[in-house]
Image 1 (cartoon, one colour):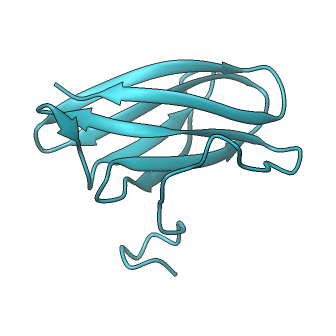
Image 2: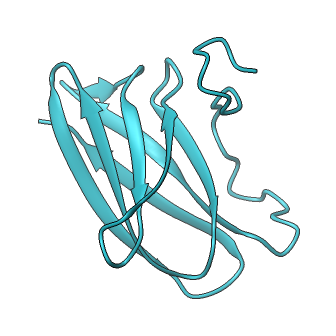
Length: 102
């Protein structure tokens, strides 16, 4: 279990050349106030807006989800504000998304 107690693995930066082993990986970084924003809660919502998962961003703002192909919204919630971004993952591989919190 992770240190935050939610059972999600510790979040780290996802290298662009990662071998996704045929899976859809939605990953990125949360930023705000001119730099990375660690500790944000990052939620993955499906195309209908339904909750699919949540992780806590690393101290460097990194997050990663393993998902299915489709349209996704990634929402970050932080004490300094909220932000969201959309990504369409049409097939396996790394799908990067940046979230700016304001």
